[in-house]
Image 1 (cartoon, rainbow over the protein chains, first blue to last red):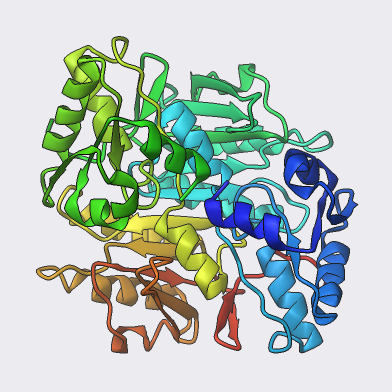
Image 2: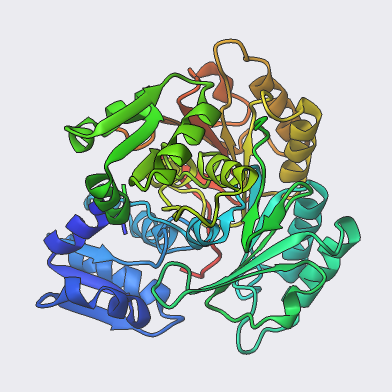
Amino acid sequence: MSIKAYRTLQQVEVIVGYKTYIDLVAELVKGKEVISSGMMKEVDRCQKAIEIALQKRSVAVISSGDPGIYGMAGVVLELALKMGVQEAIDIEIIPGITSANAAAASLGAPLMHDFAVISLSDLLTPWETIVQRLEYAAQGDFVTVLYNPVSKKRTEQIKEAQRIFLKYKPGNTPVGIVRNAKRGNEEVTVSTLAEFLKHPIDMFTVVLIGNNRTFSSAELMITPRGYSL
Amino acid sequence: MSIKAYRTLQQVEVIVGYKTYIDLVAELVKGKEVISSGMMKEVDRCQKAIEIALQKRSVAVISSGDPGIYGMAGVVLELALKMGVQEAIDIEIIPGITSANAAAASLGAPLMHDFAVISLSDLLTPWETIVQRLEYAAQGDFVTVLYNPVSKKRTEQIKEAQRIFLKYKPGNTPVGIVRNAKRGNEEVTVSTLAEFLKHPIDMFTVVLIGNNRTFSSAELMITPRGYSL
C-alpha cells in the first residue's frame, strides 16, 4: 500500500468496499463507519460513497491493487458525471500497486519490456473482443499479463488463451503464475506455455506470459531490457 | 511510494541510484552512504550494488516508479545470475507505482480496461519492433501508454506513433498527456489523437491513447469498464 493511501484511510470518516478487501485493512478501519457489501454490488457501493460525499463527509472507496486498473475509479467518476455532481464533490484517485506489478516483483523481472494486460472475464466484455486482444498481444510479442484467468464458472477461457499464444510462441516460453500476489499467503510458480495449465489457477491468480526473449533461471522469470552486461 | 519501499530505504546502509531519483528522496537518504551517477550508467550502478551486498552490507537500488517496469530490477537479477551470486545474496524486488498508473490516476480512469505499455525509446530496442507493437496495440484496441515518447535527440517516433494509431482510430480518440506524474510539479492535459502533438511532450511525459470507448468529460479521461450505471 502507498503511504498516501494509508494516510487517506486514516483520515476519512467513512470507508466503503467489498468485504474481502475491507478485511485486508481491518486494522486501519477500526472505529470508523464501514459500508461493505459482497461482489457484484460495485455500482451500489460507489453510488453510496458519492451520496456520503454530497453530505460533506469524507469517504474512501477501496479497491484491491490499483483502483485505476479494472477497479472502482472509473465507476465512481462515471457515476459522478452521470449524477452531474463531479463539481460538487472533490474526487481524488490514489494510484496503487496492481497485481501485474506485484506479481512481476515476486517472479523476478518479467515486465522489463513492453507489455499488455488483458482480463479474461467476459462478464462485462464480449469474448470475441478478448480473443482479438489475445491474438494481437501474442503477435506483437508483448509480455502479457492475464487478469481473472479463471472463476468458478469460467474455466475454458484460459485454455483458449493458451491455444492462441501457442499459435505464435514456442511451448517453452516462460509463464509465471502468482496467486495472492504480495498478500502474505502468496504462491509463485514458474512454468512454460505448454505446461502451465497443470498448475492450479483460480480467481486470485494472475498469469504472466513471456515475450520471445524472456527466460527463466533459478526460479526467476526475467525479460531482458536489452542492456549489454 | 509504498510503505514497504519507505521502510526499506530507512533500514538499508547504502543507497544506489541515478542522481535525479536520489534527489527525489533526499530526506530519506540523509546520513546514509549514497552512490549516485548520471544516466547511461545503469549497469555500473547495479554491479556496484551487488558488490556491496556481497560484502554483507544492506543496499537498495532505487528506480523511479516501479523498478520492475523498464527499471533496474532486471539488470540487478541478470547481473547476479551472470556473476553466479544470486544464491549468495538476498535480492528482493519491491514493486512500486509506475508512470502508467500514476498518470492514469491524474487523468481520471483511462486504464479501466485492457491496456498495453510501449516504450518509444529505440536505444535498446530496434525501431521495427516498436512499430510492430504500435500496430498491434492500435488494432487490438488496447488503451495504450507510451513511455519515453520523446527525448532531446529523438523527436520523430511520437509522430510515427500518431500516424499508426490514426490508421485504425478516429482523430477524436481521447489522448492524455501527463508530465512528472505525481511528482508535485505535475502537468495534465487531455487532448485528442489528431491534436495532441500541439502540446509540449518531453522525456518526463507519458502519453495515454484511449480505446474505442474512452471518452473525455470535465477534463477527465475515462474508459468504461462496462458496468450498467
